[in-house]
Image (cartoon, rainbow, N blue to C red):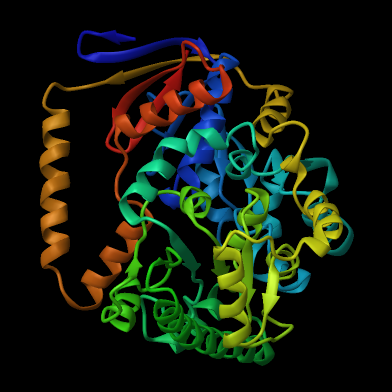
Length: 463
């Protein structure tokens, strides 16, 4: 509620939900916030949240992972009284348990957690039985991002899917993930040195692995450029939409395909709405293959190069796999005509999906996570935030000046800033309200849930 020049909420339990890569995480984070608010919690959702700010109540912070170097960043909020839970956004697909444990997990950071939420039994098994992590902290829940792939929740994207189809017509979707070659920085040796410094690279073999991954991505990138050209030629009546990974250099895709009249490089919204609107999705070792499967849409994993060090089991197992350009194009043509592809593997794929994804059916991940959090001893506290009258004006001016500066900055600095903006381009109250209305319409739930702005890119969701 608003009181004069301040915002004030009565005592309740509080949950902090961070959004770092907006297109990937906002929809799932918002759904978790609505679930928590419906249960009487207050949720502070946003990008840059200062957990030691004296006016912010103590509660539970959901971290995005416990990668090497994360422990030192958890100490301050823990000292300030926050409880810490985590869910690893990269914990669904990885090439090997060793690689996952070395690059994505830090035992010191894990030991600081109260709870760790796993995507499914596969991740939990790898962490406990192979890597030796404490099973008592692990809760198998699934990820809220994938709650929205369930048939009962897909309707939250209906309006956006309709808008996409009206604008782009019938289209074939290509999703890419080649950031080690097509990244924002060209100094890859510097990346290797930094990875060694923070403990992600420990041996010369690990360095060779990083260089091998760059070559793996180079072949993939160049092969997918050829794919875009060939599909453009074969399907002049379709739009070919390329959606690059948020960590890639998107401008390079535009350079490589700019002369093709029916190819568009688009990075907007959640990939779910683009998969739902497409006739078929083509990917390479990408989570979008898993998402397409869950959404009931045809997916092709085009693998012009194979290497057991870098191939990802799950997205390939849930997709139709091809290994050369002609076969890929033929399968795309079949799927774009509405024919089913790969149905002979339906039973095996369903079994695989259930083992990797706890929320493929049954309770939603949001519900499982909140069940676990509600069992923790979290005290009820009030929230009081001062809001000077000129704050919104100052924020708007700062935001607009920042955009102007971004457009004028050149070189590596400008590229890095544009890269950060790809991941998070700001968050408005209207975006959360839109998602709330869509969730209410799709589920018949979340009545009385409200959204209030606390600061730039930081919001309170409550009831």
